Image (cartoon, rainbow, N blue to C red):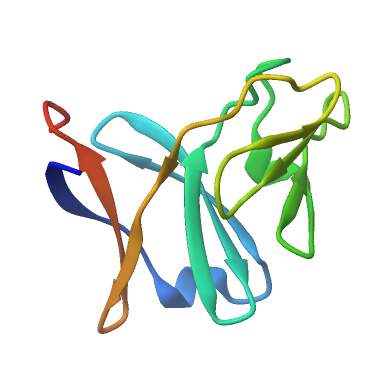
Length: 108
């Protein structure tokens, strides 16, 4: 995938939580920690315009806080109604203490 890596957050931002809302290059993203792995999704639910980062994360699945739609944070796949459209996911890498996300070409 063509694009550029951008810093989304520091690892320390996850102190006490497994979810984090960030804005990177004008894009609202949710960052999710599952064990020692990190994942990034568009933070807006495809069903009800709620912030996924405010939902309950369990076993790699985030529950939308508005209508309880479920998404796999590893892939962005919608898993349960009323969410039927997947949410965009982004590659993540750790560089030192920074969490980086790969943004598509054309996003500054």
